[in-house]
Length: 141
Image (tube, rainbow, N blue to C red; front, top):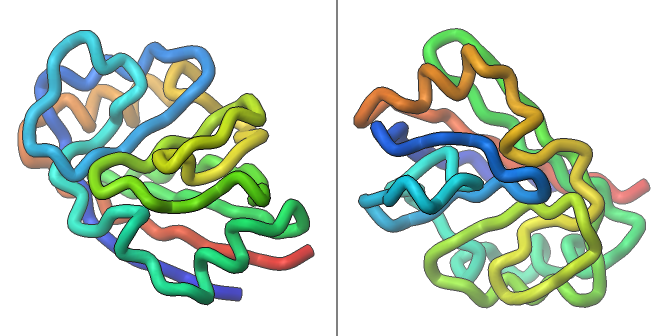
């Protein structure tokens, strides 16, 4: 198992209503159009992850889990790796319920999209600067 811990932050424009994706971004701003983005100013990006993580992510037999904690509440999104996961994006990480891959894709076949996250959790993410403690785990099945 490999583990990566990092932080992201809440923003007043978090909506959390996208039906197929959940996204964290390293950008420090968010418009109301970013309905999948649940955290900004992430202090790590996909293109910064090391080669061991990239190898695990490229395997369909790897379970990838994103755990997020904010003000005492926890949410978890779990999906799988894929040969199409390149982890080349310097800005975004996107968990997708579909099998679509690109440089921004963190995982595919995710069990939740932004719209599936607990509404109390989303409300806490709407506070500018709210600390979101994040953890990625990669486990080969």
